[in-house]
Length: 374
Image (cartoon, rainbow, N blue to C red; front, side, top):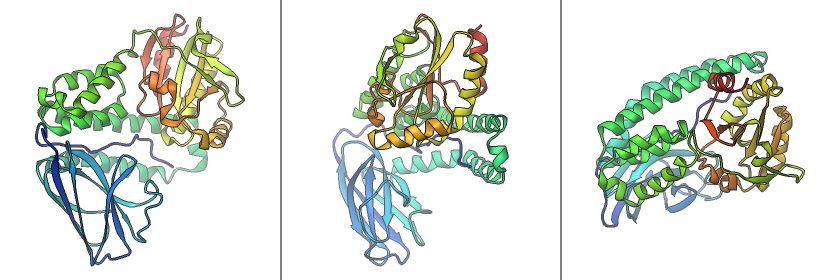
């Protein structure tokens, strides 16, 4: 069974702001790994640089304007294709000076030594290690569940509740780090990870407000501040932005069509494991409340290449309500309008078009519907 947890970025920082572009060096020693093996330095979806591994050693040099997280990917055959596929990897921060990466054989388990940014990154990882150990242990237990158990909605809800608890523990650890280190780069970058777990303005706004002026005035800080301002426009109590998107058969559907009903606007994707695992909970809620002035409108962030998988997932998960998508992936117009940065995410909207609650999962969804839908 797939783990029900959202991706968490282990982010960090040790100084307030890099005023000028800086030079970084990454030196590695990976046992006896050698050519044609290559190491790629990747940020987001872009490969920044690469180096051939010779007798286990490699070196990458570059410049950056601010500390930024990057991935080191090892390709044993040297080919750059499919950098986002299965790979051995490690996460580091690009910072002034030299970062040394050592391992007996690969990038799966490495030792990292660098400056204050990478030191803080390791400190945060250590703080989170007990939670992730519990996640791994619980994941191993789930592997023993029978197919019948996995198909039981009640079992699914129990598992979802467990991973919701794990996510809260992770967020609490990150909250504590941010509050204790308001001038640290981790306190800025970790907000992105927290937003993946708790994508609610009320949760992240106070944390951002407590950051140092230097962090908030950095390029990354200004970008996050702008994102936060957008999130404020779709918090509970605000008017839900209208949007129109097509169903799989091309019929155009607008959120405004649901005026007069309570509606759960549910953002998901066919490739999103946690979304698929949450679907039985939404189906159960829909079946219970559909006769009480309640409906669901799902918006997929699949892309055009994933159209077939989107349609297949709708059928496989037996989702009876309306499904829409402009098939633009993460650039989905409705997702951008609602400042959705991770899925699953949802918004409960009242008959007058006002947002009542955000990011309702499992028991929280049932409790909200019981409170509002009579």
